[in-house]
Length: 218
View 1 (spheres, rainbow, N blue to C red):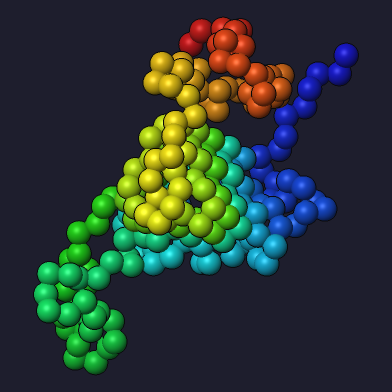
View 2 (spheres, rainbow, N blue to C red):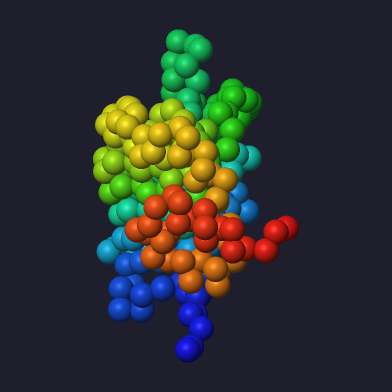
């Protein structure tokens, strides 16, 4: 029997007949963006422009971190800390970026406090045209409904929706979430994932744990 062959995480277009789908890890060049293997973006217009069209106001130093096996729907946006304006004075207008002598006061813009890195865990699904605000953490296995604006952290295996996004329900109870996080199938070697794709997609937690037990102990 021919051994199963893992998919290739280094190709830009995993489906050559569908150029609207790109793997992000081989695409991204910014040192401020970290992406795990097999996380993809789907866009019929220009998915290769992800860094400029979908990651906005990214002037650093905060990072966007995307885990492995994340699915990003068309029009997903990440608003980074550079989008913030001062709100502690009479006006929110960013005068220094307009140039002239106003630029002498650039410290009023650069001195804004940020919320830190924006982080997507592993196996996250961001729905069509959802928006993630600066400094948010979206937990492993979470789902964000289409059109949602995520302003607060999303728990592992949570489903959120709306503007602002609210927790709709958890995909699993707390005990099962702990079991899934302990299994951490996204960290398995690719050949092992390949052998157990059906279990990962459609099996139960018991089956996942049995598959995890087949791995050599570290």
